[in-house]
Length: 512
Image (cartoon, rainbow, N blue to C red; front, top):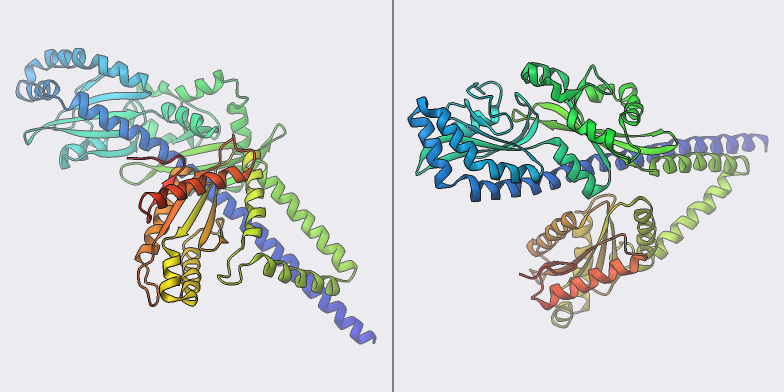
């Protein structure tokens, strides 16, 4: 009896240690996944915001710069270099109204270059011209060499910037190039407006000291981590003038964790995120490396987001360990058996018997919890509702067994092509619902289109091609209940089916 008691006790202990290890692994994986998603979100925010400026810059170039008047002046600059001061003055006078407009739109620079990549006219510093940008500005050299538009973040002789360099061509004749650039100050302002976070750009100190004109290095300022990075003075001044409660003292304290724990990531320019706290507030800080035209990382885009989830996650982890310890002390084996049995029954009650994915009852609870989290932390999520087109016809033509196989194959196909954090369920009949956490409407529409195309391209046994219609909606701060988000997705789905099926519709619908 005693021997059996020892064996059972040892078995309990082994199982307890195994459980502790598994809980630790899963909790760490969940936190790592959450932090990776924060870096992914920062990358998405950066690309979405930058793309908006790029579209506007393309429009300004086509409408106001690639005009006969400007091209004729650049042709004159190439033909008669001795008169370039006069030509430069004409160009400055002609485009000053445009420069004033684009600076009002938060662009920083309008800079013309000759075909050999010498500076011809900097609107932000008209007195500085004639210097060669070869070896300094690779975007300009490539635009003049390939005669193609070049886009990249790049350090400069005066400012850093997200640059768009356009070749200037007239009937096949290469006249030079022009740059329209976006300052980080403008990008930071737009990012803050769109996503309600604070952002900083950490520029490699060595790059600034190597490439920026010595008399222009006053455009930069030291801050936290001065041995590594330097900061855009314009951005720092706006942070100092802001009443948001976020300043460089806060940033410096939050960066302390990066220096201590993430030194290797910083040394190798890797993306990462970590939780930190200061003055009673909880933050998640995400670091996204920014590469220049040569694909060399020269800066970090950093976001600071007030976020209590990691701390909540840690509390949950500690609570789990304490609970497991109590269960072990009171008889782990028996309790564990009851727990596992209950979990199996719970999963069976929450799973759709035909497709093996979650059912509507389970999905309602999950969407409700995500809705509460999104409301608390002001994060986006989207609902995608999809319906198999002409499903009744499939049942009538091929039989209900074939229809069931279509439902199962459809669930398997979509389930293999979603992220781990996404939630997929059968809503009822031939209708399915996807809940996409941390995903705004534009990305959800792209994802929905991917799913639609995958289904259209798939081959279903005995019937070949099957299509689906999809409706997409995004949670907004006006949604007090998750039902309203689902209802909008359902209305969008109705629009998709009413307008021909096999398509994705957002809410509100965007008619051509």
